Length: 342
Image (cartoon, rainbow, N blue to C red; front, side, top):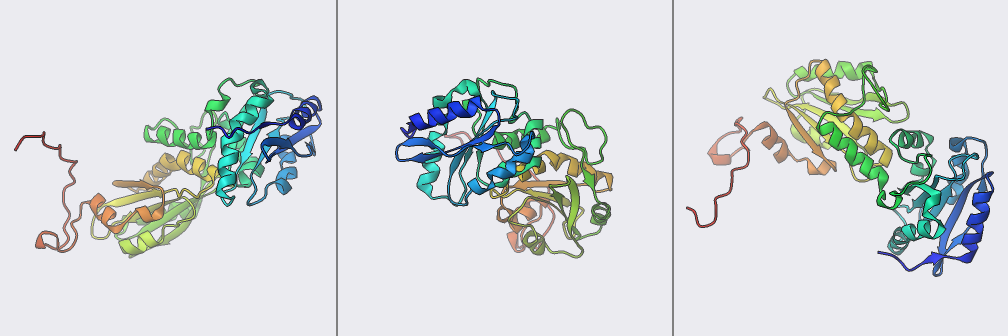
């Protein structure tokens, strides 16, 4: 859906000046009335793209969407980056307006000028230098010049998350927690000694370990470790505001349950890193003697319930069929009968 808003003559003139002046780093653009209007351009603060990002901070307001055209380097006049910044706290109408006009902006300014289009909802997604390095490693925000498929790559970061998750399911990718065997653009990730030690305690009945990733240092670290934990307390310990990896040696069984949650409110970089590292976290646990027998992967923490845990480990609820809780064999879904059959 298009908004009907188009680039103004003022924007066309400002963009022409911007592209002809290699000292200019960013061209901010907003919507005024029924047209796209330019704001004063911003110069490079150094010859480095990352070092110039901080100059954009004042433009990123918590409730005000804005477009940013960025030049990858002073030496480049092609492969420009179009950022649509729509904060999650912005008014709904503004969100819809800016989202539906982003393609028009690129078309009106010239598709051949751009190399990538990025949708951001948090200022860190624009300002974080480490995230830009991750994008480049994954082929996002490249400097390869014209990109004929730019308009089909909306929500590129989110697609990267889905791609990483799909690769992990099939064992074709992942981060090497030990720093060995990595190839291509994979990043080595350290695991702390206390995280290793905590994983070894999962041989004990009712033990619980929760791990997280320190994004800035790409390190797997221990968040929590407890013994004699009931399922309800285990679930209550899973954070609702950040991704996490949680392990529970289910009480009274030999089952070790792995729960990976990634709330929708998580930042894009967190989602990318956690999705990419998931299989390697399981491999690290295996290296410490942990035999994970059940896996649960959900978005929000409250989607994992006690009932779901019991079902995963094959335990009947108390009172079911008049019996106390017992471990049962797990069966797949029964094939439905054909219509008309008895």
